[in-house]
Length: 260
Image (cartoon, rainbow, N blue to C red):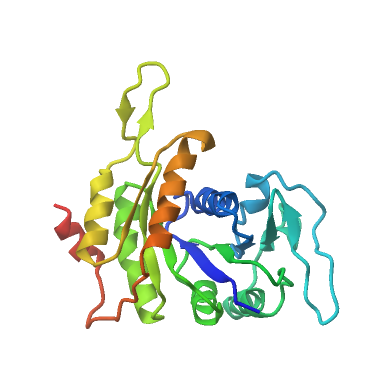
């Protein structure tokens, strides 16, 4: 059996649209004839079930050996940690428990179909225990996709994200700019709702030798779909890189100086 290739989607700032990027990439892979799984390990703020309109009582069908079957939904398989407990219940697990849960979901707990080609992974916005556990234990990582809004805090958070990926020697597929420009439906003018330009995201990617995958507009799914197909083509058309940690790593101040 061939191991499914994993595509973790990462951002250390919340609200950058990781979940919608995950869905868009999964749909693009599915539409290209690939067999796809969606894995959601965002322990504290799982958004995937609501994003795909999946309403059901908490829990998964168990199978022998303690594994759980994912849910078939809209042409791909879905396993979300958000369906393990009621949506309104706060998750107050300590760090080691979170790391252990993510390790189990990444390795032994989910009974994926054996013929899956890809698994797209929705991740929490943190550099804490669960991200470290995911990157160290998830087998078959093809490359991580870093999601960045063109705003100051998200752009500067890339420094920490790159340092995490350097420290764990995890392959990087590239960086994309999400919510990059909004076209007014009345006048047709494109405006930027944030305080950075999309080109700043491209500049950071090029500065550190990471592929710039492109930009996804602030728009409906129908309008975003072609951009996400183009980003998938970029991901599949390049060889992901592994950054080795230099002395001192990458600092947000260095990025700020670069973008002045």
